[in-house]
Image 1 (cartoon, rainbow, N blue to C red):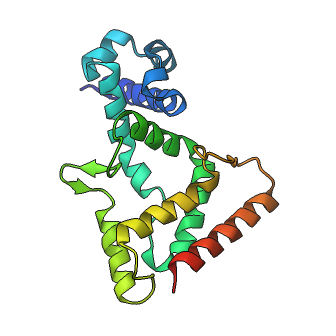
Image 2 (cartoon, rainbow, N blue to C red; image 1 turned 135 degrees about the horizontal axis):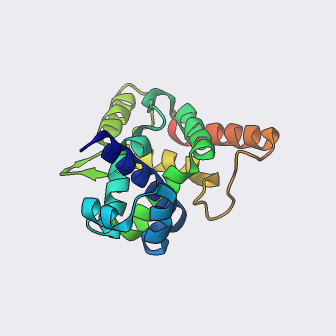
Length: 191
């Protein structure tokens, strides 16, 4: 692919990422993606085959960011949860994209799977080591510990069922939420 082709493909993926994060697969419009990227629909279909193919390519393109936007530390689950909260403020589209993928592609089981391996397996293994060292409660399965941390961190995320925090909220609100999140994760998961 030429340099111009690579740049066009990147613009298309970026525009599609925004569109799918905002509207999901069903609500996204190919015309808006083409207009925002400056890439014609024929070229888009040539590269990805369909809107579904483009959605899958976008998710694959963003997967590393979704999984690793915040470095994982099993030894500091409260700090990890707070860093996730902050990441949802700075990159809300990532959690929306992951949520759309859950709703429209993976309705049960692990959200993130690469072949037969779940993308979170290394994190689960890290939690198990922390449990064996007595730094994380041992009466829960590692995958359940991880799921609880993600759920607590997402309490005010863009897909929250109760309240969505934004970067424009007062600093005092963010500080209160971070402190509460740190305390909840500590009390629930750290011996």
